[in-house]
Image 1 (cartoon, rainbow, N blue to C red):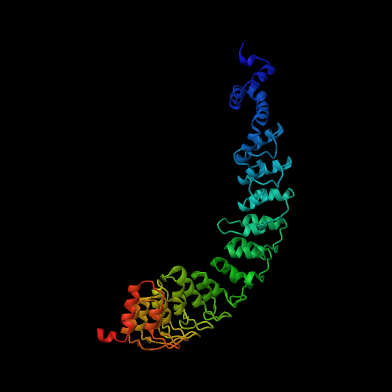
Image 2 (cartoon, one colour):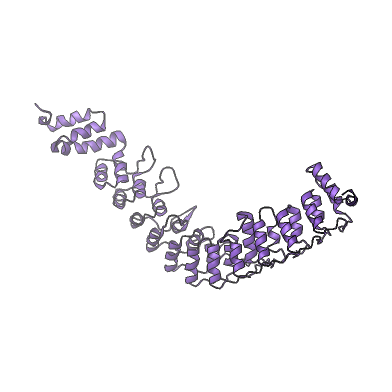
Length: 456
């Protein structure tokens, strides 16, 4: 008697004695009769012994018939995969299998169950991955298009990044009734899209009627928010955005682009007629902000530097803020010699004074920027201007015990006998200054003492 000549009851009994699912599967594949008989049992066994792993596999692989049979044989609809912690619904969403999603929802899957211990349920997972077809199925099955979380509404979520274009899912959300003016953290989805550089989502929102006059924190307009991505700026200007709009600090989008080092955006705004000499409430010009950004981040201007762009377009290199701090004052620390020379090349005033009477040479003496100081003196700067306290650059260099700088100033004609408003000579400040090195201090004192003329 062959195995296949046995009655069905015995074949099922034999299958029930097997310890491994793969053995039952192999047995089922021996003939059409065995497959028809044992396939339902195989799914039942999977549900009983393996917590319905076949349903999870079907959800991830898009195998609709397998998913249907697993459910027919009693697989738990919201069971979690032992390795990933995901429900079948979350798995099918991640893998973009809309037909499996529809099947699971029809069988009562919880659309709000979170996946793998994280904060995202099915609809948020669909939005993050731009799974538009899956999102449509979820929304058609009763998921609220205006759900919110700590990350805002679903539309905020769609707008939050430019690295993964979520335009398709944003359009589905809007079609299904998502509120395009919902607020999160004081911002609408369009403001978020402008800030993230998601130009496709921004265009979708604008075409759907999103307001263009909204203001964010510190009075920032959409154009202010968009300056990190020139494509978004171009879109907003195309739609009528005012390029001279000011925030609460009186700064225009050009100011913002310069402060963030966005040369391409700045060039576009200038091409559109933006005021290159616009002043903020504190008197800052775009050039001043560009110099501040490049001196603290870039250190040296490159071929397409923001400072070079503005100077080539005619920006005044000597215009200061309300305290008359000019661009040249801002590039006096070590490591900014390139910017310093660039400003002088374009005609920057070599002796501008701040409200406190400080010149760039004072600042250079304070920072010890020898190369820039040498260049400034070669351009004809006075070697001994006085600041509001009556100190000359020689006083400041002496206080830091910087013998090289002191020597440079003396060679340029600085007077070692000039007193400040307290009656102090540079040598007095050298004697009272912090003692980083007694040897350094001694060198400076030797240079500054009146009798040193006779010693040398």
